[in-house]
Amino acid sequence: MGEDKAIYTVRNLQQGYNGRIVLNVASLDILAGEILAIIGPSGAGKSTLLRLLAFLERPLSGQLTFYNQPVSDQWPDLAAKRRVTMVFQRPQLLRRSVHENVAYGLALRGQQASHEVNTILTALGLDHLTHVPAHTLSGGEAQRVALARALVLKPDVLLLDEPTANLDPYNVNQIEQFIQQVNQTQRTTVVIVTHTIFQARRLAHRTGLLLNGRLVELSPTNIFFERPLQPETAAFIRGDIVY
Ligand SMILES: Nc1ncnc2c1ncn2[C@@H]1O[C@H](COP(=O)(O)OP(=O)(O)O)[C@@H](O)[C@H]1O
Ligand SMILES: [Mg+2]
Image 1 (cartoon, rainbow, N blue to C red):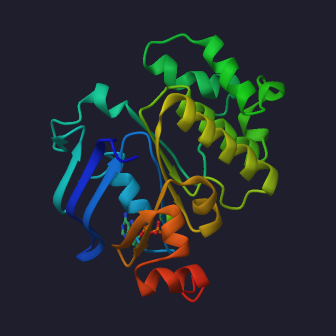
Image 2: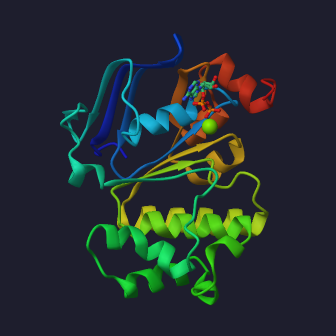
């Protein structure tokens, strides 16, 4: 990934609520085309970091850039914001058909793309559920619809917040394979937050450990797991940090 440029840069970025700092990341570059996994225990600040990357919140202090421009009230503008989509841990689907759920974001952008919707539903093994009401789906099916809904928009960046938590191995596998395929074929930059180290190991080019709001270590995934630099990383991989 050496020649890749940063889509985001994070410098001394702090976020907090009710006077308590919950995120304090000194430095992080997210590279175009990479799959970056952020792991860490519950409460470490993983979702907070993703919300900042999705421009859903403004930080207390520090700098975040997106495509080399500081994030502010003016940037990113609507068109640039649309280069980023996020999938949450619990998908919120409309009480409409699967097809309508996936087409909805395109419609908001003034696009009719029934063909693209069908293609992505097929790729995610959902073609037989196209006309089914989304609220009748299983958890794994619903999460695949949420992923389809995000990716039919062809974002530059896909932010995933524990997308396979509580899912069965079949759905985990389908979702992981699709994420990898999209990354490889469309060079979509993926930031995946997960509390399972195995998922990071399977998917990510680089893995970072967030503990108490701090990015303790960020390395190529094989180094992260095989030769971690920080004792906290070694402890987390061993399972010594209870979460
Ligand atoms: N909107 C909020 N208001 C108050 N506290 C929050 C809010 N969002 C997150 N927190 C707190 O910030 C800390 C980090 O939360 P979060 O980013 O959700 O961690 P993680 O995703 O790693 O489990 C937690 O202590 C959480 O309770
Ligand atoms: Mg979270």
